[in-house]
Length: 386
Image (cartoon, rainbow, N blue to C red):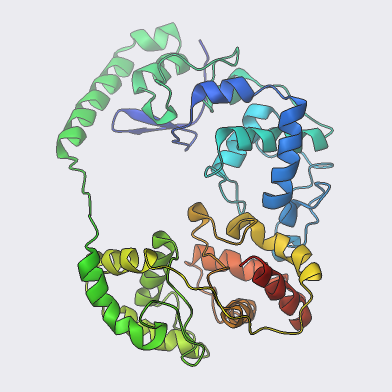
């Protein structure tokens, strides 16, 4: 038996291994944990879209966005990997994120493992998997799915994990048995107390609430340059709810120089409850976005394409946004609005609140936009993605 496998937290009788609770297919992880040339090739393509902007084209931590981070992104060539340079440890890091690096759990298992194998192909200090690092992603020492996981890491029973952390003497001890008993009691109590709350959006109510938005955002959510209001039609519902809540709380729209944000803040407070936020966000998200007129001039799309690599890790290669990152679709936003928001992030007018995680990340990225010409180039490239 292993003395230790991972740091665990006991929640309702199940464990989150090392803080990670995911519903990945363990067999798929097992099948792809060994490196193959095809996986490395696939990983290289994914790396350019998701990692290059920070870690650099050669993995030296010198990507165009690296200037915005302290500490700097890891240099895969010369620095040790903080959580280990084995395939399983690297998969764990990519899945969960680390420090300022976000989680990439929204990528498929195969895509994450392809990234793992490409990143490790750059590193001269690769390590072998250990029983501990394999266990953290749900595999046994032979690299096979762990019996008892039932195919999902979050379904690993406490009994199963404790048996593998304890010696035979520990298992027979009174304290161990009593702890297990108390966990089982708590599990049953919380199971009885837990009543899942499913909030069904009311699109009719959302449509009614949207009437107060039309004066600036238009009848179909298409936005207006005259009102300095962006197109919001078709944006992801989680992004819309997140921004409405930020306006309501003052995380966004409180800076004295954010004239349009200051106008939006009281409008957001017309929504009296979280249910109102849910209803109107769902209504707006199902509106059809319109093709936008191009108003931005003076930029070079070819130069902007390189600068846009900084944006890909959150907004995607196609600029349509990544749900897991709560990043909006840039191709559904007017070019003048995108440019203005980047300027605001760079100046600290937006993203300056320490509790605004996504805004702070975006501000760091905006700091890497060297000058107005670089901004024009990037926005001109985004226009080509429509």
